[in-house]
Image (cartoon, rainbow, N blue to C red):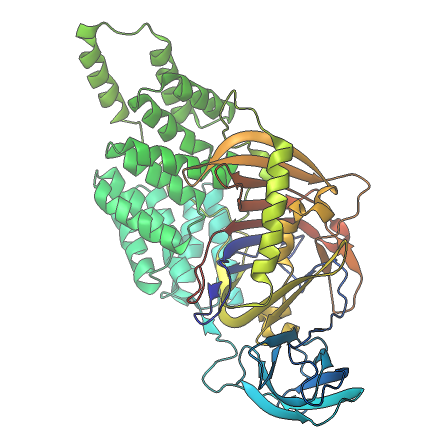
Length: 607
């Protein structure tokens, strides 16, 4: 989300990714700086009590004129262009012409209500994302029980309601069938059969990026790297943001020793998909080969954070870089974890040789340089470059419990102090995001079983969120896109709402619904951060997440587990990752992965 430049408000920004998988169906991926893989029409909704809230404010202009007691109630009715009650979220500002004080309300059900107004002249201003500002002058000559004002909003012709830019061309059913069979044959190492289906796919769509990418994979498996490189270069020419092809090109040039070019390809790939654990793993290898050990360690750790046990291969360059930095104990731990992940035989041999070298007596001063030279030569000739093999995509992110990110040993964790400080910041967050306006960017993809996008649609929304406490113990979260909560603004009518509420796991109202434990002091983007694991308590109903199959349909509560990173120096929550506690076969929801990053945004008029 990108803040609207004119917004006067506190710092706020988050980016998130969501992944969901339903049984026996095609998957959908949506990125809003986040990724949603979802299959049927599911409405992600917040189970917090959504109560109608009226904006009841007082102006400073009481007893204006004649000293009369002010008791007038003003009801501002906001209507859309067609004259119907405005169902979006609009901000209504009321000002007495003889007073500098302002009263601001928010429409709910198309109305904003102001109480306690005295006689006098007022200006009412109504603003809403995507609409022109509307202003009306009101005059109260005497106090009365109630007054009505009606204001119509008009669409801003300079603001598009949404854009629907298309991505790569969709795969036709026949092309999808041929590609599917080709991929199945590749996975079974039946290269001849894969060639037959790929030839058929190429005849159907020679200009399709996915066809050319898989042709490159086949050529590489057949031992023809020049042909593979040509296919991947064509893929990138057809789709410059094809992250897998950029990664594959990096592996080709890295095998030739051109690490600088490989680094460039990988940096481009990570600009497209910054949460690719495979991309970070490959970049770790490239940095190691350029003797940039600190960067290699950082990239390997990032790969493990994102991919968890899927990214086990990243532990090998991580261990090699730690050895190069003279950290043998840390390297040995990493290598043992690597071997526990059952790596391929060639990689296991490398790890065992490194462990043998680490357990050997330290060399004498005279023999140290010779040993280092031998080790360098050994590392420079990894058999077959097993870590630089292009692969088919694995689109489903790893579960939060697949891997415990590394934490420092011997560091005591003050859990209650951390949770109390986090709760304070969550309250600040609620105030910060209440009625902020932003531009929301959404990338919606339908993908097949191998993660290849079959269709893609991009949209831009005028986004408004309001988080309010309707009464003690009850919070309400309302989100509006283009001034409405209707589903037809979303691609395929798949609505993704309620995600800003994930941070409310740490709000005192909801914290006791979860088992909280401190895993220790870890790192997030190079900064020290406490790792807090949370899981829905047995017998406690989920109040933060639910799914509906249709508007007004029954709500299925979603029990969550997850991990949060809370920075040590300021105890701000900087990342939250969640998964389902268990699959929900009753609604065919097998997996849902949410990954949210929080960071500051400076608005033009306030920091």
